[in-house]
Figure 1 (cartoon, rainbow, N blue to C red):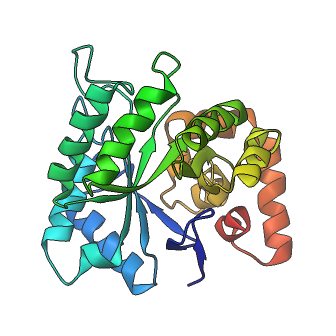
Figure 2 (cartoon, rainbow, N blue to C red):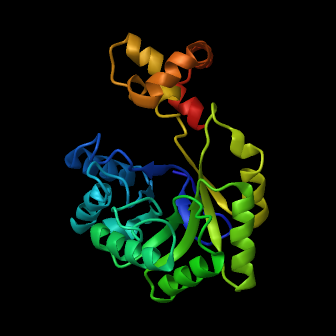
Figure 3 (spheres, rainbow, N blue to C red):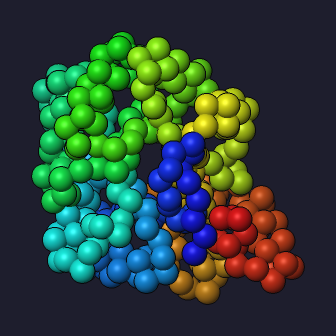
Length: 269
């Protein structure tokens, strides 16, 4: 496994990140634990989740699955760089969402409890909050860091301008600021190359692509369908994408066949 520093930080992470969004809704707890065991066997030390992930309203299920895996011991937690997120609604009340100091505090405490850990390595804003001032956000984050509950902070689904705002606000307070941005980025969705990637490069942020295989569409979905195998591209938005871009996907899979490479490997590369 190859490792790198996450952005300009000294934190060492595997170049492959284990995403856990389907733990619970699509993947049983037993299989989820087996997947995490397998990830460690291959040297993957970077796991990404979010408080909202899970089948029940308000989420939390995925973090609980990971927490029970940590509780099984064998230094699982110590070997893992743990990333989670907050912002999206976890309930029906006004302060159970977004990035107020109140919700940041409550959401972090709830995630720590579900994850059965005393700290989060990378705490990410799931989306930009246009109604909460950066002074409030960074003050709340700094309290969490001083308490030892969070070590690093990151963003997700930010525009380049949002990254600039966040970093300049952090710089004015002499804070480290963000060390990463998590964006949708794959061969079919490349808009982050316009401003997000240049902003991340300028401010020293690592970039964590989510949906690198576009929900399985770039993982050989058509071939798997022909062969009768399981594919994430057979339902939901992925199925719609296959219908809309079928010719493009067919050409992509043919290119991979000509190269003698698995489409998933080409997509990740």
